[in-house]
Length: 126
Image 1: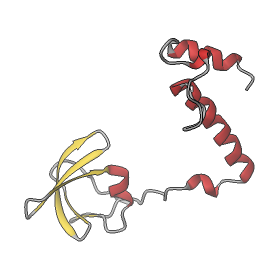
Image 2: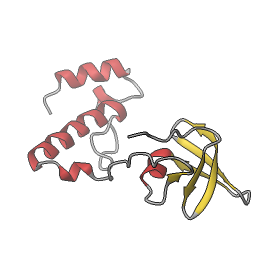
Image 3: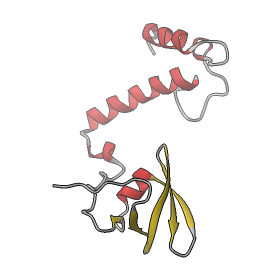
Image 4: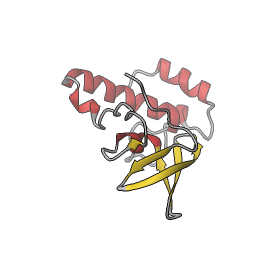
């Protein structure tokens, strides 16, 4: 199957309008309509939108829906969520998004480098 190429200058349909892709910056696209309206849209959001299509070309493959984690078996999902807590603690100092007022000393980004926090996590039993 041939895929459409989405690049600056591509004309596309999205949200009941025809747009020209004016700027690609990381995962963001700036779109400009024929009426002069502009919009900034995250590419995954744009590609997943059911109304999205490239004018004059085949539609790109659809992005899988959000919530894929829920499609996994329970034990796999639980393991993934446990790993998420460990990764979050190394990155931010906090294993959960809310709850603690201060990170544990060995995971505090203000006093420990990322390498030190990674080493502490490798030795951590919690």
